[in-house]
Amino acid sequence: MDIWNASPALAVPAVQGEANPGLALARRDGVTQLDERELKRERRKQSNRESARRSRLRKQQECEELARKVADLTTENSALRAELDNLKKACQDMEAENSRLLGGMAHSQGPSVTTTLGMSIDPPKVQHHDDEGQLHKKSSNNSNGNYAGVSHKPEANTR
Image (cartoon, rainbow, N blue to C red; front, side):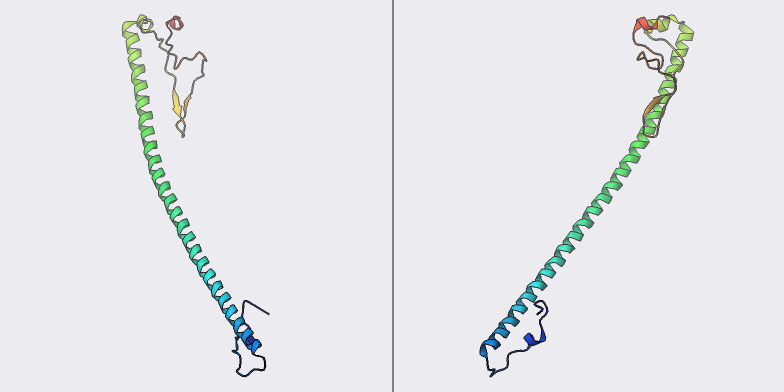
């Protein structure tokens, strides 16, 4: 017997005047129970459909929020890259100006001015930045902690 699908025998109402009235009552109760089960089953299906619909809406909202975040972060990243490029150029310009001024000072004042300033003037070491903005020296590092041939210790500058 299939309890989920009402069989035709149970769907037929009891005929009046049956020999066994208890059988007719059982059939009616069986039909009622099957109807109640079917009703519960339909309600459960509808509830599951609604739950699935809410879940899909939630996922769609999460996806839209993530897309907004991607767009915002992409814009911010572009702005930061542009700022980094501007700062790199400004740094290169300042380093060139500094080298030019130090060279002019050493030329006009003589080497004694560099000793007075506590710096040695070496040709500037060229630096470059990679795509991630990391700073790298192109010349060899002389491992004494000096940057571009400049030492801030006066005793290190006497040559």
